[in-house]
Image 1 (tube, rainbow, N blue to C red):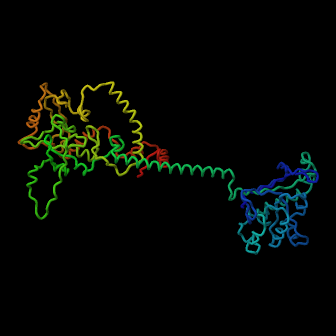
Image 2 (image 1 turned 90 degrees about the vertical axis):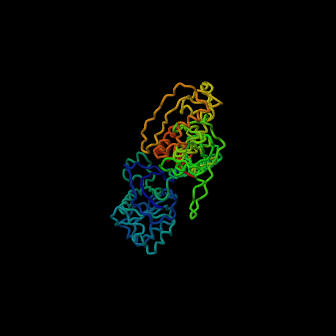
Image 3 (image 1 turned 180 degrees about the vertical axis):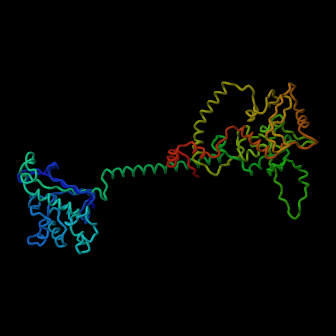
Length: 571
């Protein structure tokens, strides 16, 4: 066990012949011997040392056998009146031996002599060592010629101290080997102590700074280890629970119980293959039709293929064309009075009739219809919600590939606040009755389309008069700064149902050709931006990125350990 400090003090203790007390009292260092050596000790052997315990004992010099030649060799370094075993009480007090390191024979003589004494440690020093620290433990100066076998032969630890410290201890031991009246400052000591008491040097070797930590640090490390184990276990449990929550949310989305975008959790878009399956037909007749310009997303104006011409078109026999896809149909076809206008561009639909093919419309799963030139780009690139009723256009069971912890937290928050929001909405609805009843999900969007004045057959009808188209003109693809023109409705009688189609036919058709909005890039972008404005504040495209922007750094670090308190992208 390595030693880091050696402290030698002067103590007074009673003579066991006349007192049964074994109390050691330290004498003030201003009138007694005191010596301290730190960080200059070398551990030659740690045999018999106890970890974490300081080594203490009365300082003495072992007595060599009579006629030993080492007595004469050690005489220049060991005073004749140093403290020996005979100058100590006949009691097995713990002892610490000190001796000069001379020849290998003399060193073994000192070690063998100390074997019969209650020695707890042995201190050696090189008498001629002039440096501040003794040589290293593996230096040849400490060799006894037996390949260091002597280091394991004796049952007590052996240390090396600087030569100057060894000489100082020898001089101090010679001064405090007699009775109380012979030590330095005896007159002052006799005023406080009995003359029959012993005054000797007491040594303490500090080994707690070695490989063994103090008990306080051990306790702190144990507490820290337990705390880390609790944090790690809690983190694992929370990660597991959050994974279960992500799986549960994915399952509920797949079952159609949760609409992520409608709840403002994550913005979704409609894939092109899903968009192609939505019904596309002629307004008013229900005849399926597919506008080629919409399907290819070109910048040329839209042209509607005649089904009869398409069926009679010649196909090269060398490269047969793929069979045409059967257009999707719908069982719901709004009449001109139910949904007469595209809510995005505010252009009237032209019903199909004899000599007039009518307007091609796209029907969403919520049964709202729009120009495909207006709604397709919006659904594919911006949002999966209907601009009118805010219902999802995605099929039931459609779930995003990645479900994150941020999405789970948003959904749980919406679930908590939904009952309170529904209760407030019911109270407000009961307090203020609607002035104009609307049918279906189109009621909220009808107020944004035009004023409604009359009702007929259970459906609202618009006031009479013709409105100028508010979408950009189709004459130029780059003219997207045309201001919206609005002509007030003249105060005339309501147009009958049978006259509405004639009005549309007269104003929206020319020579029997189909009137369809332009499909150039400028108009598609204008329609997409208008649909986004109708939708209001969209759901975040990346909930985790939006959450990370407004989250402090310390909270992000906390959430990386405890996912219930933060958002990490996990599958």
